[in-house]
Length: 55
Image (tube, rainbow, N blue to C red):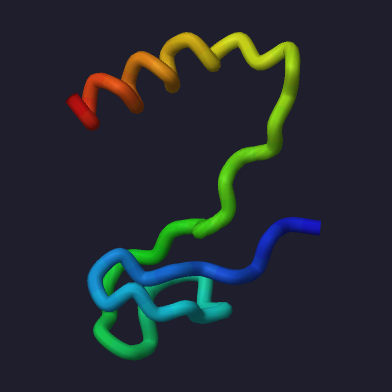
């Protein structure tokens, strides 16, 4: 089963809508992190991006 909960990027409220925020009309994103996999082939790129943004 897919995650149903979404979070608005603008007002940070949660909703079950799939297309846009019912409060402000902003875009939605999935608030859950991706599943962990020990054989993740993109982990190197995610770590580089994470530490590049923070520095």
